[in-house]
Image (cartoon, rainbow, N blue to C red; front, top):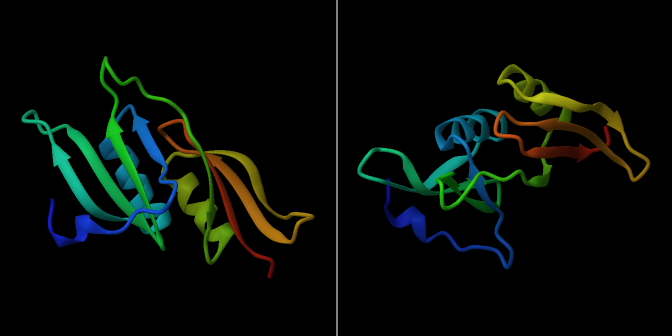
Length: 128
């Protein structure tokens, strides 16, 4: 998939994930964070070479790990409308809980998960 959406502007800093299975990562991001694919390039074998996802007002990039570019784990803080509901969706898709939803001293309702690709997501929403 590559069309006029793939010209979405990038922020000054753009997260870049190298993951063991790009399809699994994309499905997780779409289901849990309502990500939209805005660019997708594949090798002749069908494996994702490079993809861009939009989550809210942010864009992230990813590629599937290769011998040259091994997978690595990243850590993200993500603002969502409902941290508890997002946390629940993440667990339903195989994420591991590292912090159940709770009110943090800094005033956010937060939770933490490790996704099936090994990345940590700190999920936050305004305190209720």
